[in-house]
Length: 453
Ligand SMILES: Cc1ncc(COP(=O)(O)O)c(C=O)c1O
Image 1 (tube, rainbow, N blue to C red):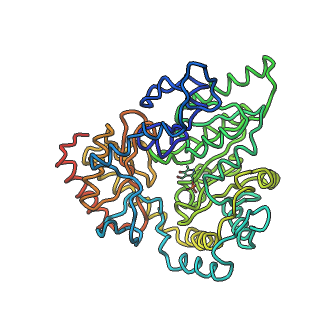
Image 2: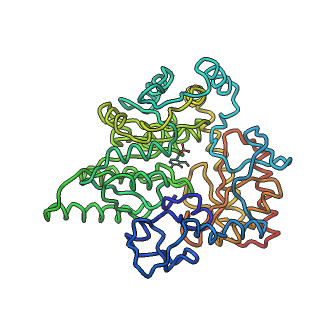
Image 3: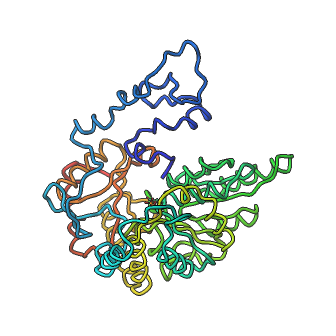
């Protein structure tokens, strides 16, 4: 995900709260309707000629949602009334779910559901406090030990969401003299973690190792020329959430060693999916020792909610006592922790699910390619159906939705310009019959809309 404003970016609109980028980089953003000449950043200098603005004026000028609703193509915040995993009910209609991150299909597994119920009965519905004070359960520590072992790291730490994990980890570790090297397509939570830190932020072009090296080189030259030295962190997604491609970890690790940087990999879309045991992209590339910190979420393959980071014990202990997003927020409730433990059992004991997931992804990717679609370079369960323009993407989404297939439309700047897409994601529990039906419907819609890839 490019940039920090995920939701508005999905709508093709930049966040109105992005004062820093607007004023520090290149002045007001002309793409924001009606705001190209005005300041709305509280820290921005105000001139005496500038009329006083009401804080809510921008709300009146934000018409994107109303426009899409009027056009009958607003696709977001759709309430699901019932779910069986691969099939959901919306407005009383059954749809094939092709937009979930429930990659291994564990959310409805009886062992996972029962573990959540039992934990609610034992510990209650919530922790009612921070991990730091009254909110740490024995169950949190049990999960942390399991995760550390599973990820072959000394120690692990559980947060309440993956988003908070990135905020907490990056801002705790990266201080004033330090520098972060972050892929432009990294998830919004990484971008926000970078912004919360006091470090210097260097964004490199997506998966472009020459650009990363050039930025590392320039930074090192600055230090040789007298700038105060500090630590360096390279941070990447293991699997990119929109295009489904992998980070080139071997090359990243090589550059990190050469320039004395630490490596943090966000394996949100890779835990349970990649690697011989499902431990993620570091395991996939045989680089568990070389990747300093692995981080992720329980909201995808592990079928719940929550986040984690794993690494050397002293580093994790440092994060534990400095990550504000953990210390100043309530702990992950027991039912979620217990559900994750049960989901981890499935990851460890049922490797055939992972194999089925990849077989399903390969089947759908191949079928889309055979129909003439562009699906991006990835080999993950995230399969982007690249449509091109924003309007065409919304119309394609609407037709698929009407025909019974749920997908997620994603538009620029969340994806590169001209690559607006329908994000399709596959589950291990999709049957071949369901996937064949998806292919049939996508083919019919493409024909109806005279879509030429
Ligand atoms: C790469 C990546 N990191 C972090 C997150 C945030 O995870 P969570 O849903 O647990 O907040 C996501 C969620 O979409 C993600 O894709």
